[in-house]
Length: 302
Image (cartoon, rainbow, N blue to C red; front, side, top):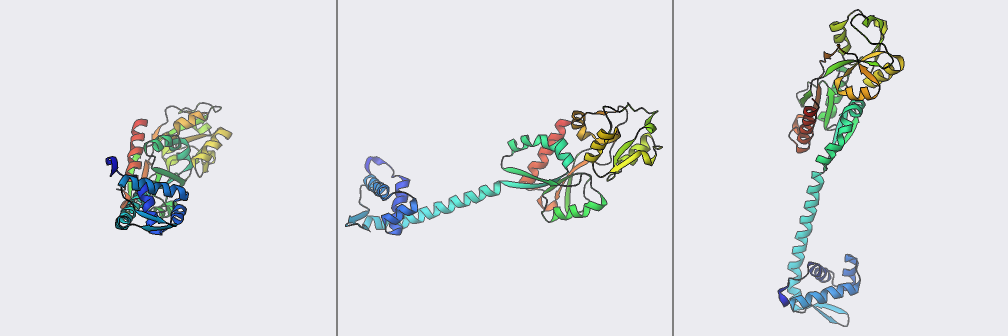
């Protein structure tokens, strides 16, 4: 080689294409360049190697003995490079993982949602696709949710309480406390006047029953309106000046919405916050990353 320079890889690729297709025109079409660019690359390569690779006579581009010896091995090299690049791209696609996370709108809006920017920054190759799920696990929804986890329709599920199915792995992220909240316009409740208020409670958990047994069991049933989720409880509480119980995960969002905690009436909930995955995927790197991050977030919040 002249000047001890290794030939241009682009020039080698051009020569390989010309030799394989037997035509400057066909090579130019495959590589999306002009025929003159093909010719210049071949000339440059021949100058770098110090030998003629293609005999150009009356537009007939035949390989010289040197070109004929180089072309087959060069084709093998570029096929290997192509396979390597494709394998690398496939591995990259596998590294980019979308996790389908079942989570209630309440937990997403008032707890997890504001934290997702941090997750995306830490794990840019992981994407959380959130789908609606019940806030509380119950006898009615545990079976369908377990089925979705086992059959891969959900990669993970965040709920208060956890499935008992052996095929599911659960991590308790944190215990939860119940806070008695009141709209700003409602009078302040005390131990002496709890029976004077109206309440709204979520009927998919037993928190209301536990709380009334702890603090005041004589609140009449007609004073309590039961709803299906915490979002409805918050809205009814605000619109009708009813008192309500909220998990402490929602405390900051509730305060921002104008609700105020009634002091002296906290109670530990029976429903800790859990993340659940199918057991066979619990060691998958994406799942481990999600669980570890959630545990870190909870630790910092508490």
